[in-house]
Each structure stands twice: as structure tokens, then as C-alpha cells.
Length: 303
Image 1: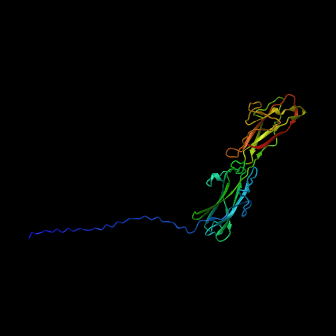
Image 2: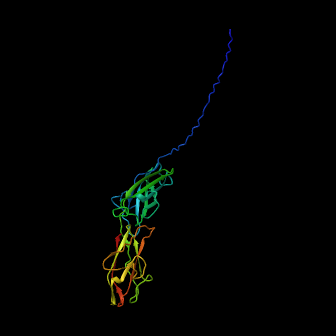
Image 3: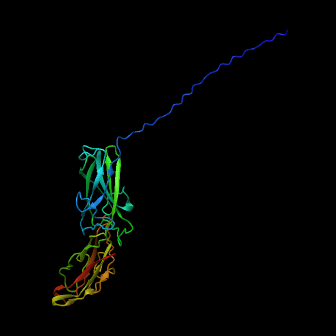
């Protein structure tokens, strides 16, 4: 018998436990929903809930000064209380802006306003708000013929609670075009000698002030001046210029009885300036004495 040798192989089985560490992100569960702005009314009185101004009934500006506008409505929160101090509502803000500049605009008299609003109790979860804003006379026009006639104005009310949750609502409205220029009522050349011509030292600096929201110019015309006891000063001996120069300078334009557009280009950007000047000169004839007077007409036009 042939002997056989058997080899026994032992296999050791190993179990490897693989532990995978999973990361978890904590999610904050807010205790209540964000505030809601229920309505926005653009009116002429605080806490009035009648929509006085909108896209069909534009807000008319005052000439040369501000005009107060009120934006009112209601805000609903989870715990309103009686104001900002004892409820979840922290603030109500009004942002009023021309549509294309956007809600994040920088405050500017032409197109962007931002103010804080006041609140009063309404019910357990509702507060009445009222926002008071003084709109400048140079606020951009969005109606036909205005500088931004293809746009509208937005009145956006933003309510924020104590968890920085935000609710908002927008109402649109229009601002009409207002053409108005502040024009001095007289031109006085003072005491001059016969055949004397004015210079930059003694001519008339005549300020024209933007009082509206439309780019403006003026027309000028004049009659002859009658002197007492002697003489007449022809209108053509008086002249206007857009620069401060002496009488007879090539840039001066003689006055006449027919109105002439001076192409003033008086804009509405307060950063550039809202006042421009005309400079009036005169050359006296040799035969004239006494006090001389006549009529000069300066009239505002679009331009």
C-alpha cells in the first residue's frame, strides 16, 4: 500500500468592518413664517387705505419744492403685538424708485428714495403701517414726453421680522412731466454813460433755475427802450450770451422783437447743477439821456 500524505490547509476568514462616517448638516427650523405685506396704497394722507395714485392717476409734483406722499397698508406677522418692540416684526421700509434703477438703488432725488415706516396695532397678528416721503420736484417723469416715459415708479414696502425673514409687495405709479423755470422779473443795467458798453465787470448775470422735472430752455425777445427825457435804445444794442463776455464779443446775440431759443439745456440732475445763466450786455448810443426802460420777455420752453 502506497502511503499517501494529506496536507490540510487552514484558511482563516477575516471579516473587515468598514465604517463610513456620514456628515449631517443641521437645518434650522424657523418657528414661524415670514411677515406678509397685505396691501400697498399710495395716498395723500397717513393711514389712509384708498389708492389715490397709480398708473392711471399720476402723482403731481410741486413746482420748485417737495411734495409729501404717503404709502399705507397692513402687515401680517405671526405675533404682531402693538408695534416693533413687543412682537416679531422688526421693521417696515419703503423703497420708492424708478423701475429701471431697481430696489437696491442709491438714494437720489431724481430716482430713488428710502424711508422707515411707522406702525400701529390692528389685530393680534396684523399691524397698520404708514410711510411718509417728500418727493423732490426733480423726480424723473415717466409719462409721455418725460425723460423716462417708457418706465414706471415702484413703491416697494419691505417688512422684516426678528429672524430676518422678509416679505414685500410693490405698487406702481406714474409721475407726470412738469416744465418750470425760475425766471427773474427784471434786468437792470445800472448807471452808464453815453456810448458806454458793458463788460464782464458790470453786465447782467441772469440766473435761470430748474423748478421742474423736464429739461428746459428759454426764449428771449425785447422791445426798444424809451428814454426820458431824450432818446431811444434799439433792442439790437442789447445782447445775450451763454458765457460771461463783454458787449460786442462774437458769442453775443443781439436781442430782437422775435423770440429766440437760447438752447439753454437746463437739466434736472442736481449733481450737475440746477442753475444756468444768461449774460446780458448793452451798448448805449451817443444821443440818449435820463432813465430808459422797455420790455424783455423770457419764456420757458422744453429743451
